[in-house]
Length: 136
Image (tube, rainbow, N blue to C red; front, side):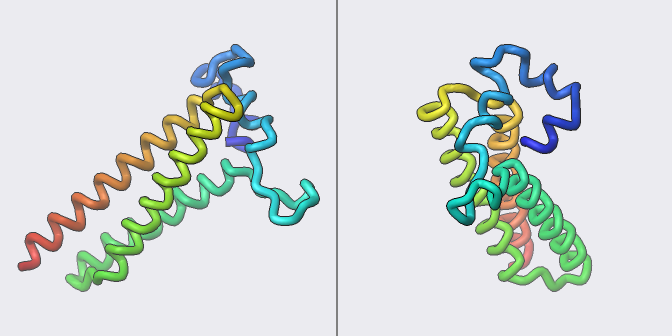
């Protein structure tokens, strides 16, 4: 949530001001970015990957609504939504473990994002089950 936190002062109300347990500790850690090349100048903030994840889920959801209205919701769409949300859960678990074990601090926004990812997965799975149940 690196670039989001720096541009929104109200986020400190969610995260708190205690440095040992705040979003700042997590986002300023060495684990907050993924380096594509050994030089740190070419690293991607994990928070940016989270935003991209949510845009992909939004796109797939809107595509699903559109295709559902046309009565042509295909298996590829269904499985792509489950795959992307499953990957989101896996990465959320990894990032939460990194916070707990390596950083020893928790980012409230990151935990909320992990919970949201789980909810999105459950809703997506439920939608697919209901759609396939009504299809037959």
